[in-house]
Image (cartoon, rainbow, N blue to C red; front, side, top):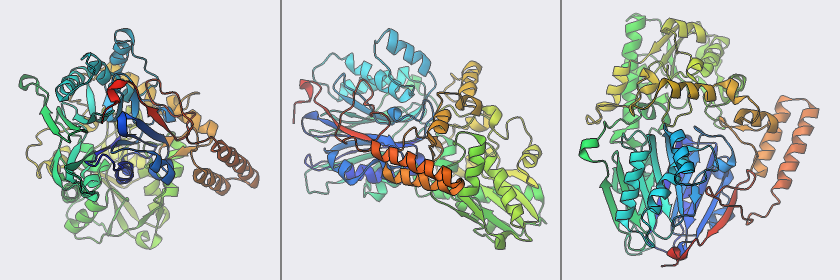
Amino acid sequence: MCGIAGLLLADANAQASAEVYEALGLLQHRGQDAAGMVTCAEKGRLYQCKGNGMVRDVFSEDKLRALRGSMAIGHVRYPTAGSSSTSEAQPFYVNAPYGIALAHNGNLTNAVDLRHFLDHEAHRHINTDSDSEILLNVLADHLQATGKFRINAEDVFRAVSGVFRDCKGGYACIALLAGFGIVAFRDPHGIRPCIVGSRPSTTGANGRDWMVASESVALSALDFHDDIADLNPGECLIVTKVDGQVHRRQLIPKEQVVPFAPCLFEYVYFARPDSILDGVSVYKARLAMGEALAHQVVKQLGKNHDIDVVIPVPDTSRVAGMQCAMVLNRPFREGLIKNRYIGRTFIMPGQSLRAKSVRRKLNAMALEFAGKNVLLVDDSVVRGTTSREIVQMARDAGARRVYFASCAPPVRYPNVYGIDMPSARELVAHGRTEAEVAKSIGADAMIYESLEDLAESVRKFNPKLAVFDDSVFTGKYVTGDVTAEYLQKLEDTRNDAAKSKPGSAAAGAAANGTVRDGAVSPTLISAAEAVAAAAAAANEASLASARAAEAAAAAIVAAQAIPTGSSASLVGTSGASNGSANEQEVGLHNAFHDRR
């Protein structure tokens, strides 16, 4: 799961980087492993900065100033397909044709076939394991087919139509074409969200500023209150730089239209509560989930249940937990206090690391648990690691009985459209009944929201949403191309044993002593992170270990002495050098860019 943002300012002399930085910060919940940005200045010249870490770590004030230009696209990442290498931080870049950078949220289900095509027929080199680079090169190949010196909107529409024909899976993309404009498109099923909005130019220039993002919160916070709309499934949006013209077109022929199926898990877990996705307020949907969950609690435990207090697992379940408590007529209390500087745990590599992280992330206040029968409310239960630790924490804090309620149905199948969930056999509900899940996590009872109630909690606010991607609950994949063989390959690459093999992301973490926010970072990219890593090591180890961490930090700081302006090879991917956050001028690619 990732977050994407793109901005085109009406004033050609204005700088877009600062606001894209703000947008990425607002989308940080969608990806904490890496961040990046590409901007476009005069004569089609491109600049980039990307690396592992949080948005605030990757972009300094100086780096933002160096990202020149009135057009920009940005990306925050959780790794799905591929690894946690900085070379796979986005946006990706390819110089031919025309100079294209692309930010992608989602996952391709036919990436293997597309890689073979690009290698054997299109003769395009793919430098990473990321399917985002594959998607970029498919787009580039279709644009190359125009054979034109300068392209127009019609050429772009034809190229994106080709992407829709070739690329299967769930994806929302924003592309920047050097000197031309920004292009956004959403997969034919609309699985991943993508929203556009505009505002009058803030510098008084003629025309309007346009922004595209994964969630509406990024637009509203930056005053893009006009023309707000979700991109429809199979739709492409083009905003041109020279004249500021906006072109939108549905590119899927009527006879080939497939069901609109947005991801249901977006509303349960990923999206911010103050976002609106496909016409549905995430906040209202979660209130409805909490109400439906309360009815499920009564159905399972009876009207005369013995629940004394309802406590949410922060942060995503707060809204639903509050409504659940109100319907049950029980007190709602914040009994679990969260350390906000620990990332989401179900994506963390390795079971022992996830278990440790839960204890560091949450602290149970005994005064809310001691002597009480507690209903814990969470958005979902994936591996069960977090749930198991939280139940034990509640018991350690003195709870008499602990009931666990999930706003989502049992997660029994892997996600193939952009959420890096574990292999099926590592899902706690896979092959287990509710009673067996309760026993596994140590709860007195396990209560799940029904799939029908969950879908209705969203659909009631937009009746047009007749179908959802609910594959993690049902094992039914809306694209229709997910085979048992594909799922087995996914199983082989996603399980903890595979991730711990030498050369894998998790193994790299063990070698480098660096794991951050649920993903592996091969190299720390700032002195601040080095200090944080040293402090964490000192907290957990002996004085000798602390000295070792201090030495490692010193080595990392020394690595930062490499001049930030040093350029890196940009063969197909705009990769950063050696895992460090880098920025460089991508430069002019051909005479096509030499225009105002």
